[in-house]
Image 1 (cartoon, protein in one colour):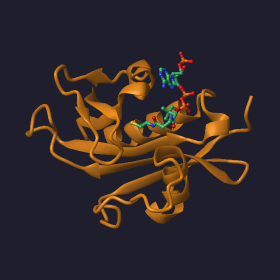
Image 2 (cartoon, rainbow, N blue to C red; image 1 turned 180 degrees about the horizontal axis):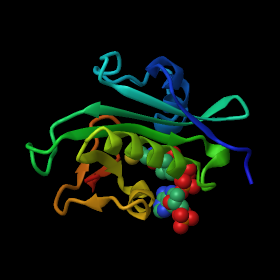
Image 3 (cartoon, protein in one colour; image 1 turned 180 degrees about the vertical axis):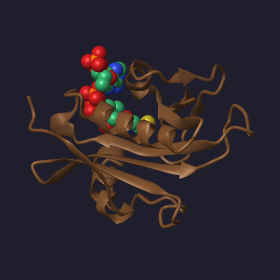
Image 4 (spheres, rainbow, N blue to C red; image 1 turned 90 degrees about the vertical axis):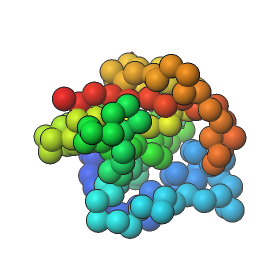
Length: 151
Ligand SMILES: CC(C)(COP(=O)(O)OP(=O)(O)OC[C@H]1O[C@@H](n2cnc3c(N)ncnc32)[C@H](O)[C@@H]1OP(=O)(O)O)[C@@H](O)C(=O)NCCC(=O)NCCS
């Protein structure tokens, strides 16, 4: 079992290394920021284990792809470091993110989920929007629009 994971809010810059390594093939030229990163409404979460950031997740207020009337956030840059994947750490951080949004009245969270990661999200109660399959312009990998109703 890993040591206890601490989930905390950090700056987006603190997550660039993990974003780059796990989500962008460690390409030094890859874009690892979101234009909304420095907005005050953006929230950046780190899962910290033994002083190291091993999980990252960021959320941004965003129009729901399901119902524009619903108060919604978009999840981006969800990743767990390679050596500690499959140990429940990503689930801990994403659950903390969703719990925090729920407490503040957010009704829905959505994401462009990598098809290879859809099982992770479905384990946590997320749903797929049928027919939303597409190639990501950032990674050229197959993605599907997914969401979770928070309340
Ligand atoms: C997808 C990712 C974030 C999951 O994080 P993780 O810490 O490895 O996942 P966890 O160990 O918390 O898994 C929670 C549950 O989801 C399952 N799961 C995890 N990754 C999965 C996957 N790719 N496919 C299917 N199920 C998966 C686990 O088996 C576990 O199930 P259990 O509760 O029945 O044991 C991580 O593997 C990762 O960073 N992958 C590469 C980058 C990526 O694809 N990010 C998502 C971009 S949308």
